[in-house]
Length: 599
Image (tube, rainbow, N blue to C red):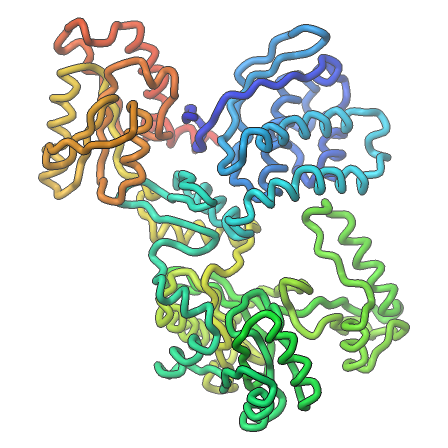
């Protein structure tokens, strides 16, 4: 694994075999792009009007593989670079490319992305590709690749990919620690991430947020508006709590997320008993809570500021004045089918839950809703049933934003999803009896462009310098160590903790050796990048290792050649120095900035 000039993700070399007929096609690139977008959602390339060439087709191949990996929630934000394309045996081309490392996927799953991309590319070049049944193809991709890879990536949750992509947009490097835990940035400027939990979140606050009754108790004590509720253990206690609170009530498991086991709008003891049983199957402790009026608004708080606020509507369809409810559902499902299978959020078909909700609205499947009327097919939004979001960030009253930020702070969470129940987010909470019903640790964060832009601004604020610490490379032997010591001394004068390492030895800011199990310059540098006590790193490059492993970082503050200052047998020869400089100098910060601007 290593970095290449112009790339900001670690890469590895892969070799692909592609038949000559594929790479020597005369198919128009624009037509191919249309087919790939319909089949997989891959956006057209910048050179859609160009004539097909092997290099251009391989670029599409790498872009498609990266797109499929992202769809499966793997953090791959660069397609990679083609190293060479050479004719091979048996009418095949051998393609050698440097592609992003895919953590934590095993090599077999990583390689399957590129094999699948080859098959899709070949199918897309067929004359009748545009007429092909894309549903069966998408099901094959979904079942054979997307779902197995998502299963591997599941510990990272849906939010990791969006946050990592925002970090990438902000030029923040990241390293996989294991089990979908990531380190954003380097050394003392780094932050740890798992799903949307960050290392600065309070463990006590995160665990408290898992218990809804405890969350409301904490918030109530500091004067934050929360609904009245009671924790119960059996149906009798639930009935007593509901009578004390007053109908209608909400029943929910005390320690589950994603809307699991929640029943709203309970107005009698018979419905209450069924709701208690549903919640009790998921949790021993059940919460009976006063139902707050209004709609649930999810307010995402990030490091003391509201990033965005959305309304959370149940699954719904909108009337057009001429179509029945059944016809509207059919149309909505058809529109959803135009997206790739793994990106769809289908409108549910009519079932008992939908029939009950329609009846509550005075409708049946044969009713024709007036134009513009929203028809709800579920009583509430949940992970199980899905739903929709409407952006209300610009309409959120400053007092509502402030109370949500305060709630997150009271729970000790730097990233939190605060659920505010209100009729109108533009009215202050203290004027319309709005309440906070939950504060969620590790809230869902989408990976859409608008959300990524907001998260990028957040990261740029909380991780200055893109989370990067200065990293110097000095080529040579004994004289290189002397130069490294001078940098360490200059750093110490500024109260910076500077570490020096070569291939065999690592020295701390007080010149004491840091004993590591890591072997080699690449591994030792990586160990320092992950150490929160490191403010600056100096690499003394005294052998050829990096020519084999590649660079451990994508950016250097300085690259200096001290190999000829004190010539001896242990020093590097001029040819090795030249090759090392060719590898490292393009990664100088100034050159990297030029490369980023060119992109």
